[in-house]
Length: 116
Length: 114
Image (tube, rainbow over all chains, first blue to last red; front, side, top):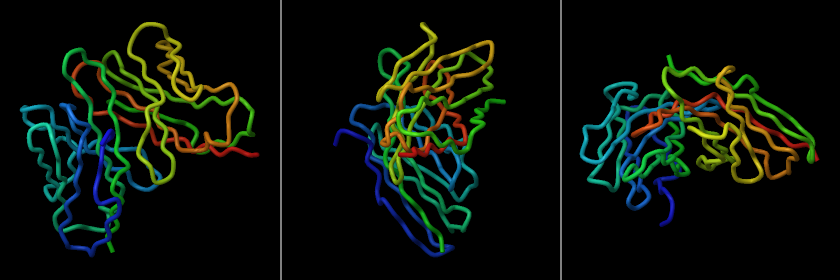
């Protein structure tokens, strides 16, 4: 597709369960980012991947959160032993950092995660 | 510390009226500034961006923003709003080169009165 695709669009799960969120970036985009948006809040940076470099995990809130990316394609964000405070919209973005820089991030529609 | 402040949580304007949304930032280097718009249940759409050159930048949907270094501001404006402009607006700042961990403001929710 033309844009960033995220799945599922909605996820409801019980406290303590693990969840996996998926992001398909725009084809050819080298950088991929995950953000969290709590209700009524701005976005908080979680992690980003750039090519073959080590990911920047500085925004992950706890060791229950992890993410992987295969090459310059799909990424998955995993939350283990979910807690109610993990309820939020998780947004993925990608950008093209090849050649000249200064390319903005393009966002997906997000996954709305609700922890019961 | 890097931060973005959007002082107005919620603004209501009448259709056809002018609009200004405020954004102030704190950033330790030359900033790369953005305005995004988010409609309910949607992701973020880029309205405009600025990192150098003319301090008045034009974006999509008739929006513009002015960078004022002395005031650390990047306010968003539109001369005449349309009902379809009702949405949440986010200001963000990042670094100019390389991958960006964008720092976002809390957002301003815009309501349009008919």
